[in-house]
Image (spheres, rainbow over the protein chains, first blue to last red):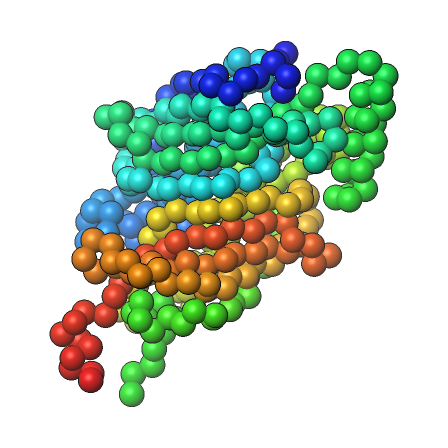
Length: 167
Length: 168
């Protein structure tokens, strides 16, 4: 297991790849983003995107999947991201595109969540042509390594506090 | 006089300061788990029992599930106003977001209400015919606690020059 203390600015992770099928796009769009350019190939041709493409929110979800799997494979546990300071959708993701992500740690900071630290990460999602489809700065929350009694106590308090405030 | 539907308005017709409460959604355990299995496979999104041993002390919705539901409710809201309008889509494509913060977890059974407030129309023309509508979006749980906020830039089509001359 690698904890917040084990991670440094400058470290990079390159994720595995995943291919977005037309079926994936239609399924997400039907549930969350039923607009013609995500549902209907013909209508999509006349849209700003020029073809059937994935919802931007499907791309953000797939980004999270890619980086979650990659960090887990590298023995880094993350909690929910606490925020995204900026994110740009640079290009549409079309059916058949294969995506991968690059994550670079920009800064490591303490967290106001007990027993946690944060990492500001630059995350870029590329398509199979090496073109960036999404660029973002995401703040990930990573557990601190707990050594010694005092920090164990802090972790207990943290668990209670989170349970109460969100329960 | 033709009605001006919310979705068929030109960029110029959308006023800064316009505020909408555009929908609510109750998150079920099943949909949190289904979303988690596809996109966010950590146990606090996928396994209600194993989630008890995480810092969240139970299942929570992925932050990207909240944004997906935001989109669903936004489309539904816009479609209601645009019903019966052909070519009623002069806005929709998102450019990017800023200052997204997930303030507190969303758990099964929580009902989240979404609002947006148009805060700025930056003086920029994108690809000859689009303007940018910047809105601040907030989501609140059933205790009126803020759970998510962000700013998003969405493209809206500018009124063609010929059109504005005709109506002048």
